[in-house]
Length: 143
Image (tube, helix red, strand yellow):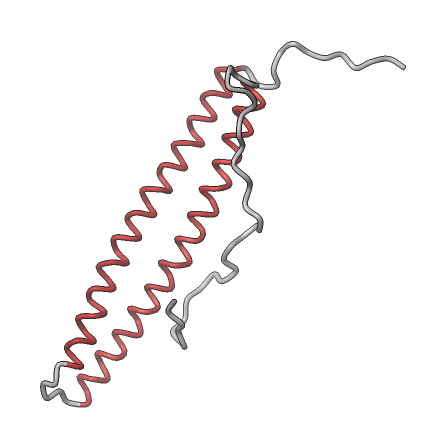
């Protein structure tokens, strides 16, 4: 039985593989920055949420129309918080997938080094962490 020829040439030229790995890591870093921006926005939103609740609970005389308006705005704030949660899950999922791709590329292109075989971050367990693709106001569970 003839043996397959094993090529000494890697599947991708090393410079191309290194460049591709750099791009994957830059995309991952961009996702980290986006995650921090979303977290900062969520923190500001939560401060406003608690401030509005504090005004309602402050004991000052507030008419029913104002209470209704504030409650509606608070409901919209909760919807925004749900969006932040979904976006964060998608970012973390994509970050994990990019990291796995970059690690596999490094292992396949560069092989083992003096420290041994490369450690590869595991891929995401599910194809998509968030199945919802739109937001509507409704009952909310905060956890």
